[in-house]
Image (tube, rainbow, N blue to C red; front, side):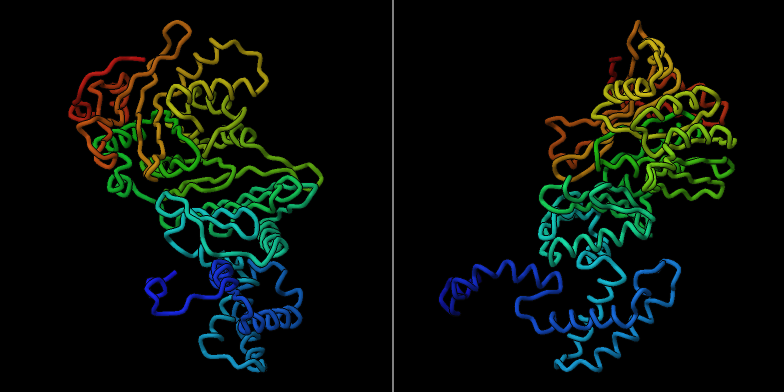
Length: 459
């Protein structure tokens, strides 16, 4: 209710209109209004466009650069024959919405083009949420119905050679711009089809960006650059959406340009600026249940490609065993990420994933291999205010009995004196890493000033 209405300067809407105002606003955002003649005209024109162009709209549009201009040409012709009186703004609106519908992603196309939106989450046709600046908010956008949403999902899957139906109700795919897509449909999704799109940044964040966002500070950034140039094996640990891939991108930017890099991902997200990069992507099974290429297969193959560095986007299964073996057999400087809440949990997860390989290895042998392979763990967390911050940079020291020993080199300090979360910082613990001398053979020197701070012990 507006302020004028509450003060009695304008009449209140009738009850039925007030009850429907929310729905009306949502339809408007999606390009549809209740009893909207422009919307009806759009539907008629869209059907005529499908009749006019036929299969052209549903062929391999990725290679048809002339389709966009052709669609606009036909739309202008159809609008010229439209009997409904339309203003110039209405004509522009119809052209935009029809193009979004037949060439783009329907009503969510504006969300995908909005640079402030980092993730689009669709929970059925009428419930669409986005993430902006680390916070989730509901939008007024809607699909017409479940069938409308399914058409968009089917179009996304068709473009990447995948399908989703009752027999195969889940799919992971990638948009042409690299954005990650996950779709799940009934009967697995009980409340209607669900579509999640994690947008691909057109310009990757740099280490300067992370410093300005207070994700890490300059001493920590200098230390991480020294570790990558000094060929330390690094694991980035964190939760879903915490920024692991962003940190991995930044670490990858420190790799010298004269080294051969092989990247392995389930969905290609890394954006490396070096020239000598081989990008590999795993593949799910086809409709006949064949043709699967797993991350583990790719890690094994990468060992035969003479890589200087192997970068695995994320280890989540038995590929961890092959990754550890690569780190232990001369492929120093390898990088990867995994899901875990703390550096200690990351070690436990690595051990569990190695056991998933089906090898009958004792825990002591697995831990020895982890301690020998991994030099450092970077922990990044997402906080309640939406910010993402590196909370631990921990060195893997070795074994003490049956336990892998860690020592924190940098730790996120939240104290009473720090004030708000934004003022807290990643501070050195005062401990110099044991591998500092090993970096000298790569021409890397760690200045003691990077580690000045309060002392901390092992754990």
